[in-house]
Image (cartoon, rainbow, N blue to C red; front, side):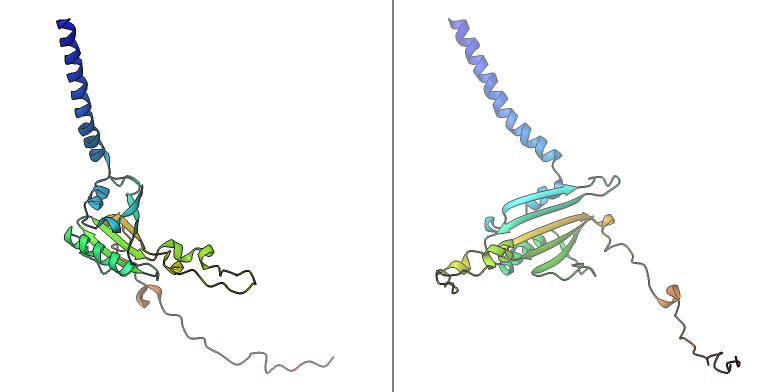
Length: 211
């Protein structure tokens, strides 16, 4: 009986050690294999209300084999785009990111707050805008009352679509076209188109021969 108790106690100790050691091992392997850029984004000091339902997407090679890695994170914010953009910009500056006045930032006109940043070998695009529910066709559809006349919206209905949508895009600087030198289109390379020269019609002096 004493030997069985000893074996049982030893088995419980071994199981406890395995459980206690498995969790740190799991999180250690996860941190080592996960993209460090996402780990850095996780470490940004933004409030919980500004990073709701985050979604990470990635493609390309982490070591720029054939194609450099492109990372994109989208998140929802519970507050307006202006306040959300302020807390993200403050967090990026506190994490060592420098504002970058790129020529194509953004590449085309967009609504909301769009800023670009640089840090070490990375570039980052931050876009904070209104939530997607603002453009929801069902929400924009006018309501009609029983008599066919436009119905009066219920109190607070206009506040059902609040918050902001956040997009963070991170590239390797060597793969960012905005850093690469752009081809010149000066006249010395393209030449100049000469002005057209108009002359008299060479057939104007000809008279028709009698038939």
